[in-house]
Length: 304
Image 1 (tube, rainbow, N blue to C red):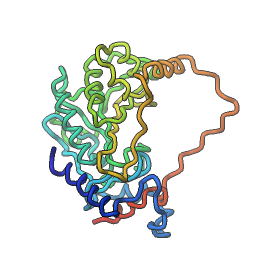
Image 2: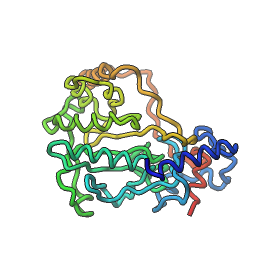
Image 3: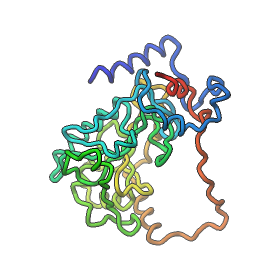
């Protein structure tokens, strides 16, 4: 194991033994955040940061309400990957996420027709809410993997801004289309089989297709969960690394392989249930304020 992965665990253990470990991230201490900062929109503050905090690597809070200290930047290009949409500056994450992506890209390079992977959004330099796009990706443990086979790993910065991934869905996500191949399932299986992974989000038609085709050990299917969109990429979410006590873990997936639930989702796409006349109108998503985030995120934001 690399030293920079071991060091945060040792530091967290020493802090806990000394009685000065970080507060629980899901119960932020608002008193630590100055009154003039509490009502500021977190997405504007974190979105303006162009480099990581000078702190030990740590994730604070939950995937959709948190931040990341001491993040690492994924290299723009590697032997088996390229980071896409570099202008967004969202190729940051915990050391564990960087290691995972390097490992996954190496496995992808062994799949026929793939030289590696194209990696979409990870997190901002200090995590936190984004000015556009994702509600999650806030604590350096999420990454989007394009479903477009990476056949050219010499793309220029300009090409990476203009090239697009390829949709795999048909009938609004009820089925895969002709772009889906057995190699896509091989990549998703490799991604889900890593013990560091908590969840993989992918459109329901792809989950049902893999449920039909998977043989042998099917335990990896449990981590693959159907979700809206996610037909140009699949979303990998790592579990909180050991020693990061301020990180709030994803709940374990439900028992079983999840195939029946995915099939029901597909059935609802093909034959939508009648609308509930008593259902409340959806409310627009409220933008997170600094007071909504764990108290540690203020020091992450202010670190130089």
